[in-house]
Image (cartoon, rainbow, N blue to C red):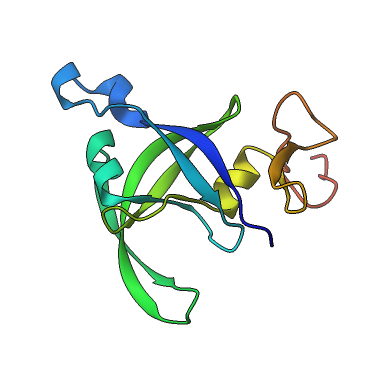
Length: 141
């Protein structure tokens, strides 16, 4: 796949419930679009700026096949070109490059065009995300 970066805005979804002094700042950064990654991954310094809450650890497998425990934070609201979603965040080391993975891309209904090195909206719903709810026809009760 061709490698490309996109601008994204991230904010602490919980800010709306927190007193002003406990709220994180909104972060604007460039992220590597990585469909091989499952989730949104941000460096520790951005997570600190956002003041995201630690929620646990998950085992992750790296591109080199190694497995490690990584810290998980949440909930973050991610915005890419006017589309947004709420996701948990995997913590990367300080200074690492942010990664935008398959889960948030699916949530925002972006299609990846590696040749054009850009995100394209779903042609069936170009103005807003269209999310699948089920894989087959629903039975009426």
